[in-house]
Image (cartoon, rainbow, N blue to C red):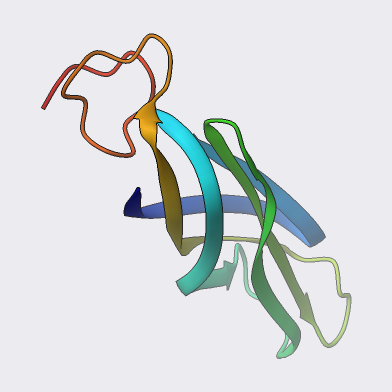
Length: 121
C-alpha cells in the first residue's frame, strides 16, 4: 500500500456562499483519503466595505474506486451589502492511501497517484 500526497490549487470566483467541486484520479484503488486546507487567498473584486464574514473550508465528498472528490466552500461578505463579488484560490493537500494493485489499463511503472493511462515514470 502507498501513501500519496497531492498538492492542488483550486481557484474560485463568485459572490455569497458557494462550493467549488474538484476531483483527482489515481492509478490504484483508493483505500482512504483526507483533504486539508493548506492556505488561501480571497479578495473582493472591487472596493468594498469592511469585511463582516470570511469563510474558506474544504470537505471530502467521496473517496472510492480510483477517484477522490472534494469541494472548497467559500463565503465573503462585507458589512453593508453582503453580496459583493470576490475571487481567490485555496491550496489543498490530498493525503491518499492507495491499494497495491494498479487500476486496469494503467501502464506498468506508472508513478503512484497518476491517473490511469499516464505514461510510465
